[in-house]
Image (tube, rainbow, N blue to C red; front, side, top):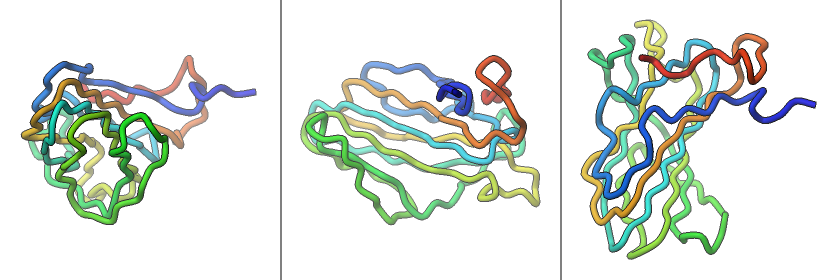
Length: 162
């Protein structure tokens, strides 16, 4: 029986932090060359009504020097804190958080490799979070799955671009 770790590569290129105001550097790029799908999870805890802007970026270069926006049509969210685990689908091409006054807010983005600009060899992906306010903690991780090659937990291809 396969474990989740045999099918999913979980990467956290930037660690969780207190009072994070953004994840805006190219250091959090992941490489989709060996994977068909990626789930990005952003969790933020806010001490008051806060805002922030999320965009997805794609690049052909691992350092993100040629990055451009990746259009998306929606995401999932839970802005009810820890009282429920329900995710609500939101049809939108950008995310400007306006979460509840306090609590844990979770946002989930799904990306398929064919959504990247393959004609120009774009294979790197990252979530860009800017201008986050009233945040007491934030964490972001990528779950790469549907590996292009058969693998197991011990030989899953790397997902971090650097």
